[in-house]
Image (tube, rainbow, N blue to C red; front, side, top):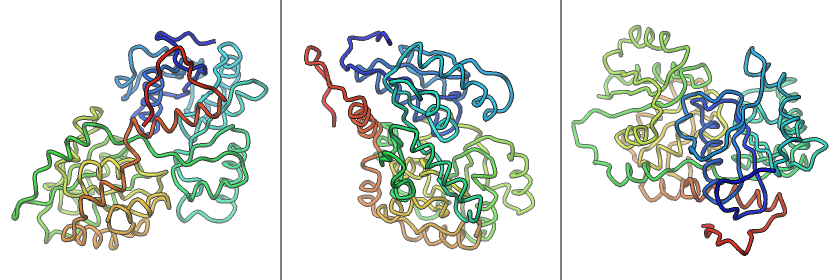
Length: 386
């Protein structure tokens, strides 16, 4: 069983499976969760296939890291091939809970725990059925997600829509996304009001890939040349050259700055705190952490209807309703309207209140305690849960 480097405050152990500490939201959540459990006195380990990556610096140096052996190839094939190794690790180290960071590893984790006392926790990190997906593809995707939920002891979802889709397929529980940091709260407190005559400061954050569809936002902005705006794109990915060429073709290259991947959370919060609008033109998402982050920094957002999970968030936060995926005209109109009708600060704050990192991760902790049937040892003072 696990040995904690700190005085054991809780009588159950957790292994967090993360393929690699990359630049995605699910990677950050998995690392933050492992750090938080460590600080709350839970014996916790981080199990990874690769230990290097963009978010590796976020890992608490006191965390125990175990490497899961894997063959080469793509991530998906590598995960499939490492099933025997992960199953053997579960039986050797016997964690009470094995947590999967996101969609691609959920089935792997659920199968690796079969026949053991270890409880499998899966996390839905992308939509179960993507917007516009129909027919056999949508049916097969839904069946696969329901099968994983049935095999898992707990499935964490990020919206009521996903929970409804998994109804009857196991314990599917809606938990807030641990997103809002102290740096974001500071960015909101330190915001300077926009001065008349200043250009509109626009921001996009995300991997430069087809899913994020930055090309749609560029097409929309080209229709708004009559407004004085400047756009910063924070992210890296295979489509950077294509997007730069698109900016030149649209005649807006002098208004767009490609800032690259921003790995420092404080710097990202500062960028959001200076922006007037965050643009999220994705084709599909699980919840869109960047929307929560931007609103936490006091920034309004414009988003496509990339997942039903964001509709309540936008409405509660006083934001423009989500626009149809792929509709550049509707996206341009939403940007223009949001420029002239900023949301009340109190509405933005109310929408993201439950997504504070510590508050949300304590919800994860309580869910794990219930799953493990554990209790806090009375001989060790336990931190109060908010």
